Amino acid sequence: MRPISNLIRSANFRFAALYVALLALSFAPMGASIAAVAAAFYRSGALVFGGGHVVLPLLRAAVVDPGWVSDSAFLDGYGAAQAVPGPLFTFAAYLGAVASAPPGGVVGAALALVAIFTPGLLLLTVALVFWQDLRARTNARAAMAGVNAAVVGLLASALYDPVWTSAVRGRTDFAVVAAGFVALTVWRAPPLVVVVATAAAGVALSLAG
Image (cartoon, rainbow, N blue to C red; front, side):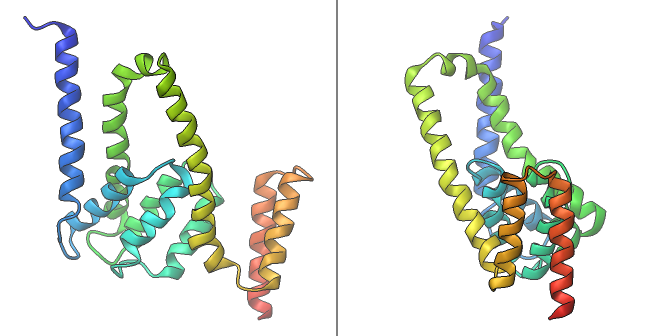
C-alpha cells in the first residue's frame, strides 16, 4: 500500500496538471460558445495576480473585446458590484448573465462563477501541502513580500484603466471622487453611506447634463 504522503503528492501533481491543461485549452479559438465563455472566465481567474481589482482588465478583455458585453454595461456592473459585500470575483456572475454569448442568464452566471474560481481552488489545493514548509523558508517569505509590493502597483494600474479612464471625464466627476475619498479616509464615513451618496451624485449629474 502506498504511503499517504505519496498519494497526496500524486494528487497534487494531477491538480497542477489539470490547472495547466485547462489554461492551455482556454487559449484555443472557440467562437461565441458555452466553451468559450467558460474558457474566458477560467483564463481570467488563472492569470490574475494579486486578486481583487487586478482582475478587472482581464475580465474586460475577456468579455468586452469579443463584443459579448458592452463597455458601458461592464462598468455599470462593476459599479453595482462595489455596492454589495463579497469578493470582486463574483462580478463574473453578472458578466456571465448579461453576455451575448451562450448560455447567458442564470446558467451563464453560474458557469462564469464556477469557471473563474476553479483555477484558484486548484492552485490552493496544490499549495496547501507545501504551505508550512514555504513559510519557514526565508527566501519564500522575501518573495511574498515582493509579491505584495508588486500588487500595489497592479492595483493602481487597474484603478487607472479601466476605472479612472472610463468614469472620470471632467471636473465634476473628479469632485465626486475626491469627496468620496475624503469622506472615507478623513471623516471615516461608513462605506455604504459613501456608495449611496456618490451614486446619488452620479444620477443627479446625469440628469443635469
